[in-house]
Length: 570
Image (cartoon, rainbow, N blue to C red; front, top):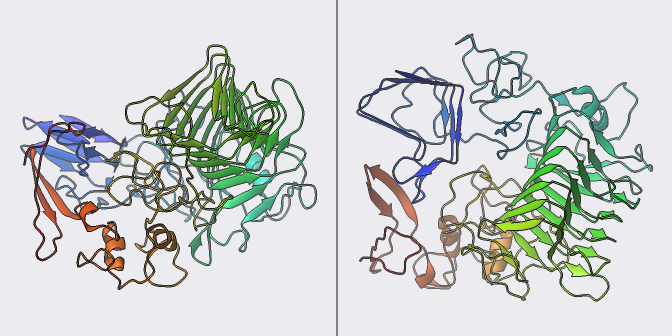
């Protein structure tokens, strides 16, 4: 017999069942488990199967599917948890998925002591009041969200009285703490000014491991991130040695690490021997003389997912990001663009030196230029450092060599010359019409993130987009993220495809523009439309596929055992 409890299963995949496959009648009990984005290799959500049926749910499991194994009335099915990427939290020896603010997994377990389990995977206490509803209840999954300190003022004060500033919350949270900005807590403010004009005029010093989260913050009901306006003469954030910072929904600008020399990297963030997990963020218009205008990492680790690194500058190279010492940096679903450097020896976009490494996946590294000669200089390495690719990256210079990377192109990629506020948690670079960014990422999206940098859904269309922004997309409520003309379609999707009327049908395929937007198809070219899949039901190694069809259109179905093969069987 097997008892599966208090565990998290995220982003697993297999030919048949992505999460758990049980056979030969093994008796299994399930409770307090979290399942998210487990899929077949063909992209179908697939969490669990027992053959023959031998699984008993004791309740309090949370899954984004509704498999029959989740048979208890206390199971939460068809429910999407909100989690960080696999990152560093609470000084643990191994990474974890930490629940974000507003996640339905927080305090959703049994209202009693189900088992004598006193600690989570991070060796933190269980049965806490993570949602501050005055009732301590165990969380579903492997990680228990700590009781948060709530930021209640946008003013960068440090007096220990009255309202709680972000600076004070970081101090008061203590080791392995949690800081949250909740809805209406800042009375409609979306900026925290760290400059001496209204604040303390100094960096935020991270000396204890902490999770900092504003991904559930809203103004008048609209999802909104927080901008940290830097102290001008200092960097914005300093992550000290041996400390984990997990930060989500905060953008940073105006930081300046003005002192030269080793140990003075990072105008936006300096990871000084610590570990950083950063999502839903834009790091822009920061500066550093020593290196790493946006982010500098020295003998540390960083996981950067759903981030935009834009228009940062460094005198000594690595205008966007610099990694030094024995640093390890993972960059996923990111856009690194328009950063500059004032040296010919090190690149303007990213620079890795000593024994550091940077690994890229589904990211953009483009149009980062040297200020001396104006030429594009995206990436460089020195010493024994390396830049690695896991595929689906795009650059306008020869950097990425994975078979799934896009060929280097020198054309335009983005609308305008600056960041665009397109709703949600962070500003973005929006692709121009015809850009090679859109629908060029992975075909099937097995793991987090479930959203783009703004907090709106991935994927949209047949494949996800490369970089931090997903064109089109939908809000959690199913509507368009930006709809200034109230026509039911996302404004940036309309601009990309040159449509404006919801009732128009440019490709004469029988679907109007609104239907094309809702079905995630191309409104300009009927022959290029991917099938709109209504349902896929697994039947062992077979699958029944149902799609929407148009009258008079002939459909052909082909199959292959290898998605990279040019040979398909009709």
